[in-house]
Length: 281
View 1 (cartoon, rainbow, N blue to C red):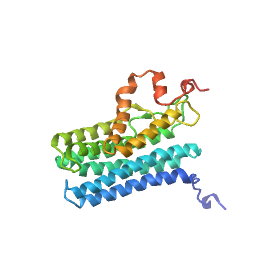
View 2 (cartoon, rainbow, N blue to C red):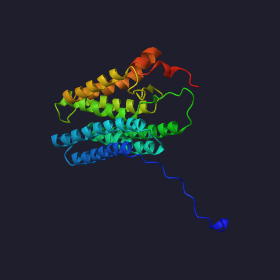
View 3 (cartoon, helix red, strand yellow):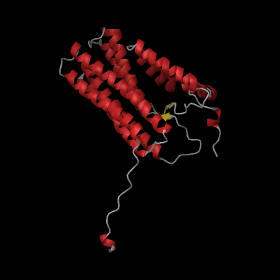
View 4 (cartoon, rainbow, N blue to C red):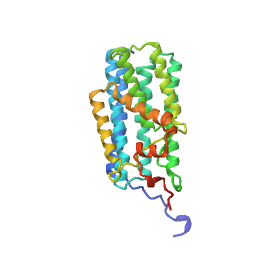
């Protein structure tokens, strides 16, 4: 056969591990159903109790997507199955669950009462920053690893950004309106400012811990497990308050607290071993 008639050569197909990608699919489906639920709420008048019920369900679905996102990467690392396919699939799911869904939810549940261009502009800024943050993360993850390269995040992770804005919305509605959507103008501007800050933090160079260091062989693991169980109990017992406190503590930790901590304090809080700071051969 001549060179001109050689059959085409295609790239090798990537490995697709089942378990971690099923969890990522759960993340994607939660985001998809959250968007569908928001559309159902939009069929009712802005600020009505019927609309609030649907937006509340969408909030729960976004929180569920956060849990799936927390688990898929850890399961992939435990199975030694993390790779480029999982990274790309995870980013696609994150754009839906933590980009489009929160932007729609905030623009319809809270920012609808602001000037249309202002509220829509904040939602668009959030969506763009979330998408750019995920693209930047993928580029950095695909680059060749450097000696002593940190596993921490550069910029606020997108799932934590979504959790922060949605849980804050949840708290504001509970505190100011007794579970309806008629929010006073000052609180609307607080929520708009919160969403703008979170958007900018996603594209910032503020360092946030990834907690990828946690495994069952390290000294701080028991503390991390206890904190995780305590957080889950708080979510169940105080669903209107606990999520906002937990997500905002993470946001403020990287922005305000972490820069002033010693390396030793960071290792204790972020469950790192001393040898992680030692030069790698």
